[in-house]
Amino acid sequence: IFAAGPLECLLLAGTAGAIQALGSSPYYLVTTGTAGTVLVTALFAVLWMMVGSLARALVLRAPSVVATFAFSLSWAAVDTLLIWISPHGAMGSLSTSQMAAPLAIQVASLAGSPGVVFLLCLPAGAIAVLLHNGAGRRWRDLAPAALVVVAALTFGAVRLGQATTGPPLSVALAAIDRTAPGDMVLHPARPAIWDQYASALSGLPAGAVDLIVLPEAVDQPMAGREPWLLA
Image (cartoon, rainbow, N blue to C red; front, side, top):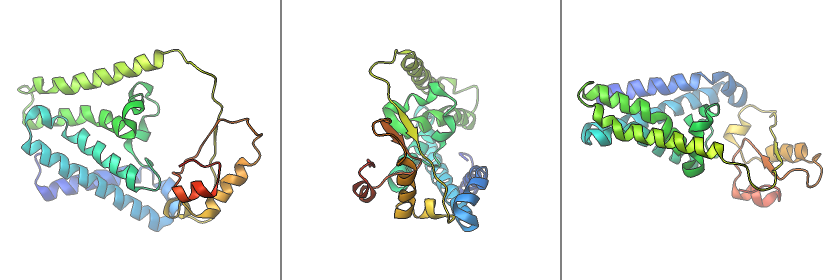
């Protein structure tokens, strides 16, 4: 996309976003219905077009060393925006694809989901800039990006190797089925949805669980309505 024109960049990035969304289309069809799936696919395409356009602009204007971070910084910025404006938090973020890579996701303790996205996109973005500028002439420009990756993975290894301290924490994960496709995605604060959670969790013995994890983001009104919810 760095060597492409503005319109071609949008087309390529949008196609990549649509492909990402289509990979989860069975899930979206169940949770949002056909119309919702089309909307989600379009939103992913728009996100990728935003990232592609921003990264392209940075690569074409910034020094080579700085440009190696363009793609990862663009994705981290969009991921941060997504967390703030989406009622579902980091749902759909690239960071959720890295749960099988414990070394990489430890950076989330410092920078959250955007930090994981930044680390994930950094190698590919840096190599793409290298190829754009001419492989063989700009290898030194990869050094800062490589150092960041090595430092992040080293941090992950050290953090995983630390002994667990403090009392054990009992965690429960709650997930529900909906009766109407699209309710969970389009109307996450609908009281009926939270009523299902309250019913599912009512059977837990008092004091048996220290933390309850839900797949949905919790907003302030619902936190005030249900004392067991923390926004």
